[in-house]
Length: 328
Image 1: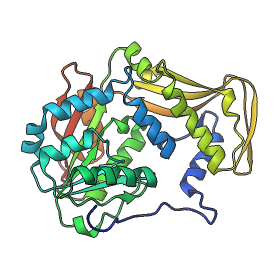
Image 2: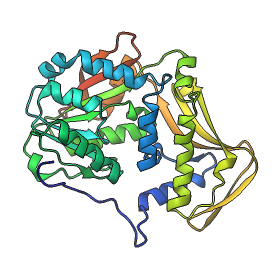
Image 3: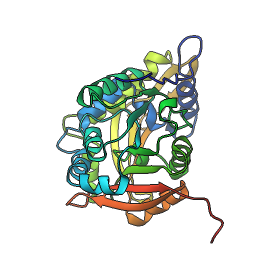
Image 4: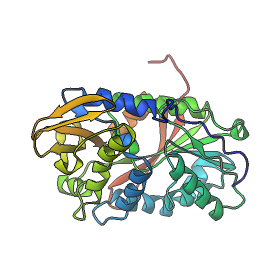
């Protein structure tokens, strides 16, 4: 690893608790439909479980996206060019990120992630694969504007947001994130973003409720994290993973369903769930060409190129930072 780490530490209280995590959990558990933002699924254990999910036979997005990255390297080189600083929103995939870096010959690589240990492990692994590439891992919540390392301040930048993570967010939050990414990357930047496509309901539901139960463990892990980090007493064994397609919102929803009436505490506050009540933990919105373009434009990005895998399951979209305009 070359250069300084450029770490931006997560805001923690005197007991080491992530203030944003606690606030989101307490607010979400107090709502009529209990909910926890999907980003909190990705602590170190959750990040590793997600890596396991990407290798499951039912989970097609990673294979489809990897197919695009493998087949379209020459297109990326032509459309993106070389000598950009690649800023990846999330710790780099051991498979997908090297494919992009080999294709475009970047000047530096800056992975951003809230999970510090997982981030540094991924950055160290990538440094061994690209020994001449400066790597600057930044531990940060990329839902907010991130101050990038000074070493890349004057470089043109490419944001990389693979995996259709943008689909985890409701439209308002997704637009806010896209605008924040534009602020982080600056004028003249580009964004290469993954978006999963609408397809057969059976294929979608199987991808989020695999036969081996890995996705269920991934979902339940957020309850274990709450117990560990927020002095929670959630009876995890009495929760069940549920995944279902919501056609009105074009999304898969993941929930944790109470198998009996429950009472528990989190951070000193009492909560209850009736049997059958759920905690909504993740959305995975699916897109078509029009909805993906509208979302990007609302977030300050202009789509310029789009690639899909051969089966049309997944898309990678290249967008330019939009130039402000008052034209209709």
